[in-house]
Length: 352
Ligand SMILES: Cc1cc2nc3c(=O)[nH]c(=O)nc-3n(C[C@H](O)[C@H](O)[C@H](O)COP(=O)(O)O)c2cc1C
Image (cartoon, rainbow, N blue to C red; front, top):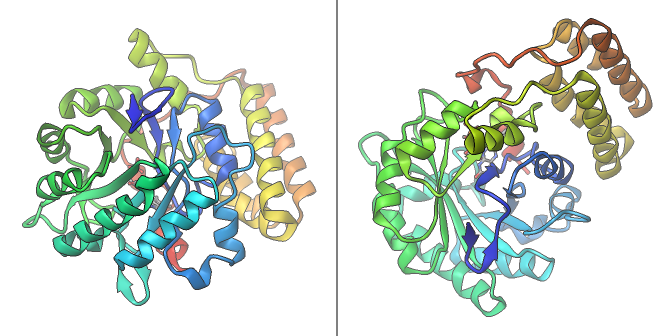
């Protein structure tokens, strides 16, 4: 699988999730079998580029390539400028966000709201492609199936995006109106795949190896993208990869391995965010790792009272030491067909 001229390790992608898919998390997913990960969205608002939040999002130190940066905005010239800015800072692929339900830029709705204004959506895609082409940087785009059930225009838009040079399309199988409610549908994704020649990526509610195989079969997509199901379970990529290759399930990971992975994740997280911010932003990750484990809920509450990184790290080590006495491996995952039960701080995360 390629994006433009860039080869990828496999067809299992990490979905961009603002506030979640920072560099430490992307690196971890890649180590555990993801072939590609898109960074958290960067705004096209120039006045915010120097902010700590945006510069953290643009931090790709030590990250195995390709480096893909997602941009969001409503103005074609500003989006082209944002693309060029990120290419200068190492982006090898630029992804345009037309999938996010909540993004407001300059008091206008960006993200999936753009699907309602096809002319502007295509103008933005063309401007970003023109800005990236001289650098040999492919442009990709992530969208939903449409604005609402009555306006599922992903197929129409996909054709037009392909015409203006977009080189890969990801489709989340929900309309903008749905937000994260209801179930993702895959028929529209299959129709998009049938309508264009560029690679198409299927996204939405993929929570297990079986679901991954079913979505690939139902859509004919070139790749799948996983968001919420990877929260606290970054090894899901390895599990899906193994199942697709062999038809067999890997055993759940050893408690000792999860302990090591999470403690390394935390070190990396503290390194990026620093002490004060790191201890708080790590809490959601810890909660996701332990949510289905015995004692997980009580531990989550305990973690929320700890205010320094060293104590948080020791508490996590202690939790997994105690768990390791009870069991060698994690319990098999619940069939979590409802990823909405996962914390979705999406709207807050979008506000810069
Ligand atoms: C916390 C959170 C933040 C998200 N941030 C973004 C984002 O910045 N850009 C984007 O295109 N989609 C964003 N999404 C949407 C995901 O990329 C994905 O399309 C959606 O979660 C459906 O996939 P899933 O069912 O595998 O989670 C976000 C989703 C969540 C839960």
